[in-house]
Image (cartoon, rainbow, N blue to C red; front, side, top):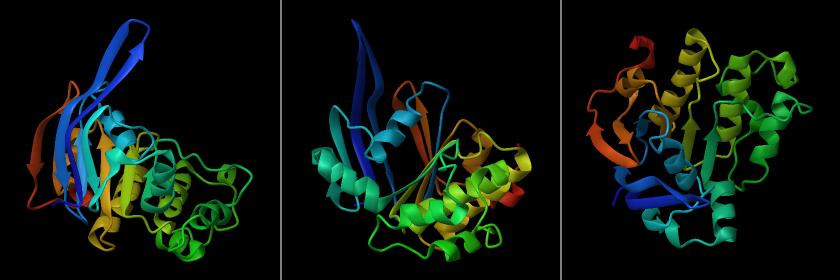
Length: 233
């Protein structure tokens, strides 16, 4: 069985008499240590899948197995433990706490996990070893996103989920951030899932999942993923 495997995932949202099926029987699998790129247009169901993978939402039917555990059967407390211990999140907007330094932001996340990494060493890993005492307002957008990545990595997660992680960044800074995510997979063996609308990024994925109209339209295995350094968009 794959590290991450979802089958016939269905999620509906109800607004008055209107029912929207955001996930309409989505199925795909990702092996441990792979970098998967989930692409599709706005409203296709990408973020719904990411929210369910991260334990922030639940499915109405179907199954989701992560590291041998059937997540669809978890209760709220179990999902909270899963989010705290197994998942790292990187969002489009950095969600840093403004009155904490870069180091304190990372330490705060690390402290909730028993098997966490050293916060200062993790910030050094993402190139911010000299910015530990800076507050978010004193950092550029790219530096704030690198703090967010360090915060996620410091939890020593089994699964790193990234929702449009370069959406608020310029091209050059975006490449730096994507390089860090690619290295997390290649060098640290972390399973990484990146949700994006940027089709050019499919070249960097070990696995590419195309989502459209709430379904996995295709799932492709890329035997020769490209370095982000060689990708242009």
